[in-house]
View 1 (cartoon, rainbow, N blue to C red):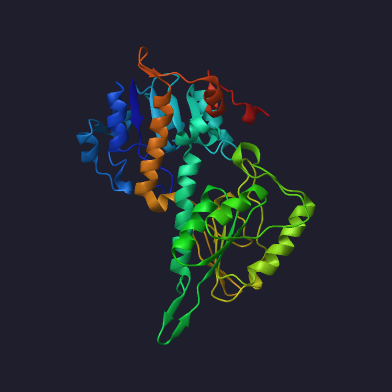
View 2: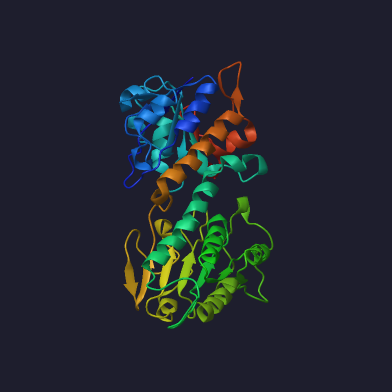
Length: 373
């Protein structure tokens, strides 16, 4: 079994799909691992570290030659897979709904595309869930980046010259990223509040010492939405939430929005009028900016100033913590493939529950139910 790890080509992508730790583990399973030269440079992993782990470090075309499995953070261009074995697996993130043409190109090329973002949110797949591992770091980075842009201190400080009031941080969307944002803001000493359309998250917010802000008398989602994500709410709920947010957001110093709906544009949570109600110098971090944005007027990788409020957000937040993000992503991939490793065949053999969930293409055609609906 030959596994290839290519250098990421996407603009601004610094992560890598394998680390010396996971290379060594794959080799222990009996695989050969080839890594393209410079693949780990963005994550501060030198080629020599891969060699020390037993990997073959070589030029890209040689790395992929004869490969039966190719690992990536973002799915490579199918043309970069020339030389891989027919039917080779490619395990990476594909953005299947947003990059349908690329998925179809994989089918036409005869590759088996395995979309890691389609990993089902079930107990036994938690260690394989790249969305959770990367969102966790993204929630942390959102707070750190906001603190950097915000022109004041986060914690309350009592000094001889007077008292500095604690920053008020409001987190909108309490998934993995939102929970980490709450925890990070609390650690920095801020007064933190949070909201979500899922009423079941109220206890999670309180457990982290934050104040829950929820719509009353209008039904939200009692438990989790599909796959652990929120789903789109009724117009009545959206109107009630907008009214609640408008009264609360005007008092905040930092707002962090995290709402995403798989396969859909990010829901709009903060309007221009709501931005105008905030104090000059406030900051809004839009974690969903790459998917259309939760905040009106936010632009990926730019600081936009509207009504004296700074709107920020990264197209790829996790890559700003490339070393840690790569370590977690690489472990997700190893946990995925090793869980199905068949010792006799010397390769992984996927089951139906997880295999059918992540497999996009097989035998020259699209096979994923979510894409065929």
